[in-house]
Amino acid sequence: MSIGHTLLGLLESGPRHGYDLKRAFDAKFGHDRPLHYGQVYSTMSRLLKNGLVEVDGIEAGDGPERKRYAITEAGVTDVQQWLATPEKPEPYLQSTLYTKVVLALLTHRDASGILDTQRSEHLRMMRILTDRKRKGDLADQLICDHALFHLEADLRWLELTAARLGKLAEAVTR
Image 1 (cartoon, rainbow, N blue to C red):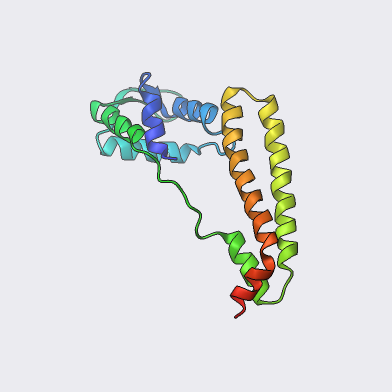
Image 2: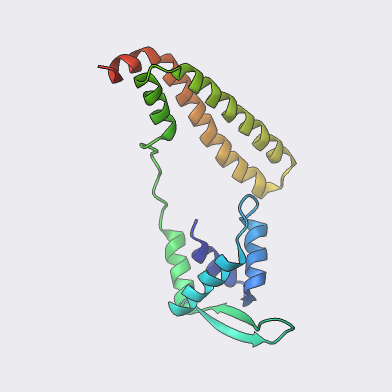
């Protein structure tokens, strides 16, 4: 996820302080990985330097001055271009799990056990996500569906690999 583009998009509804941007980000996108304040302010500094935001006002308070940021026309254009650009599909051709299975075969360890352990871990995570989805709002349901579909694909791969483990062992130990 592009933090900068996300913060710019949040600014399109109106100027905000860094604190408000962090809260909005965390509420909409950061359920599992909230932003650190330092990340917000370093990103805003970079966006300011690149002309994508401007300081809309500065307020004095008990602590440091609070800058209110506003998106510029260049920032709006940048968000529009980012939204219109498709994300590159991730083919996962360098899989850590595949590497572990092959290394287990090469070192005469139990590759089947690795697959079983991973299957159990995937199923555990799927139960957690399914529970979260059941209790969550629409945004939570959609993000959980996305993760669940990926885990289901991983499970299909685990089953296929387990079924082909003998042939894989022959192929990699030649």
